[in-house]
Image (cartoon, rainbow, N blue to C red; front, side):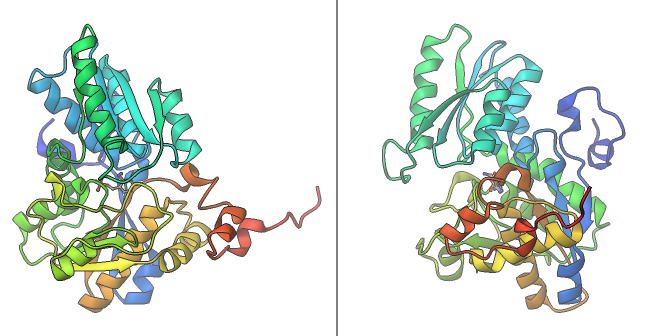
Length: 349
Ligand code: PMP
């Protein structure tokens, strides 16, 4: 596929892999009106696996095949909060590989069910911090090493945090798509970080085209990157109920990322935006997208009216019905519950 084909929205695809990417930019009405800017969300929830991580999964697998590390019938092993695993599983199924996923048991049931449906072998482990040798990422690395020796067709560790094929996928696809879709009329880009692949790949692609584009970081509470980019120290406090984001270290994917303006976004600021987008704009999104849109609003206020800012709508709210959209769960965390979530039918049949 040449660059023009890659960045255009496609009407047909030869296989599911070709259907990854080419997502639309959707104007976010309330966010744009509130700031006098044009705030656009890249609809990554429209990928075949339902999240932005399909792109990283495809790029990692294609790189491993090209290096000769991944052989026909081989295993792809990964530690993931869910979405990368879902992307890896669909890419693996389409190309003749198998997936083994190590997931912290705290992740949403919906994501675990989807992984099993897609044939991934799922290993649930207690959620412990990165410093602990039993952290899910470290466990997955050791497991991949063992399976590489034991499995007849071998195994690779996708290693999304420190494998820069992740950010390269965004550098080659998501960034150029945003550039083409805005026809270069973009003043700012902002998103949150899990591995950092999305932020890094897009930031580097946009800065290469237009160095004045401001790159923002939307960091949830409990992550350490806001303090790092604001004051040079990795330091965290508080917590967030969002999944898939919140990083405590500089991953290989984050190295030399040109972050101009970091923001720290509490859940209390993001959740009303999440509920409002669902109720009034037809966009049912996951929690990281809410942190991203809240960040885009902050960046828009910083840059002033008349600017165009792009962010990422990373996955769908359908993946979090049991948490973000569950009144009992929200109350248990002392978070706001939107009235429409508890609305009873008013019309009799
Ligand atoms: N949002 C969601 C829902 C995710 O699953 C992830 C990836 N874990 C991210 C955002 C962050 O993307 P990245 O890993 O590219 O930083």
